[in-house]
Every structure is written in structure tokens, then in C-alpha cells.
Length: 131
Image (cartoon, rainbow, N blue to C red; front, side, top):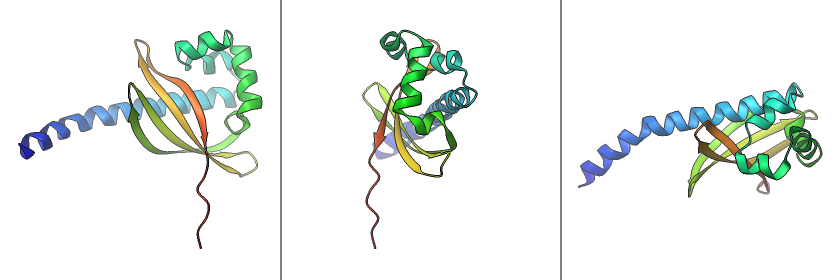
């Protein structure tokens, strides 16, 4: 029984790797689009529900520029943990903004017929430093 469970979990590893790569690619491509100020392209990486909520790439870009300035003007992105939450995956990303400040964000990802899409982003409170 344990051997069967181990074998099944090993079969899932390549799928998880593909999911991880696909998710990271979409987030990176969206960040690159924001950097290039290509709002149409950045909006294409948003899920259908996010696109419906904002209605246009201009509205979406305005929200990101003023609500998530560290996404709008970032200098570095590092991908941390990836977890599944129901039908969505949550990719934690550490962003460094243009001023060198560090932020943790959770990107909520869904898989659509057109591939992975960003279905929301939450700021994560960083843990307090310990001595």
C-alpha cells in the first residue's frame, strides 16, 4: 500500500513540475509586460473573472500601478513556495521594488483552456525578524 502511494506520488511529480514552470512563466511574462508598460499584454495574463471585474486593460493597469506599485516597478522577482488551494494554485513571490524594498505576494493561479492565468494577488505580511 505504501509502495503504491509512493509510486503514484512519483508519477505526479512531473505534472507538478510542469505546473510550477507554467505558473512561473505566466507571472514572469506579466511582470515583464508591466515593466514594458504593455497593459494589453499584462491584461491577457489575468483570469477571465479579473478581466471581467476591471473591464479594460487601462483600468487594470491603473489598479496595479496605484494598488501594487511593487509589481508595477519591480527590479527582481523570486519564486518561493507553490501550494494548491482547492482549484487554484498559490505561488508565493518575493518582489524587490525599484527602491530595494522587499515584498511577499501570493499569486492565485487558475488553469484555463488558454493556459495558466492570474486570478488575484494578495500582499503577505512578512514575519517579524528574530534575534
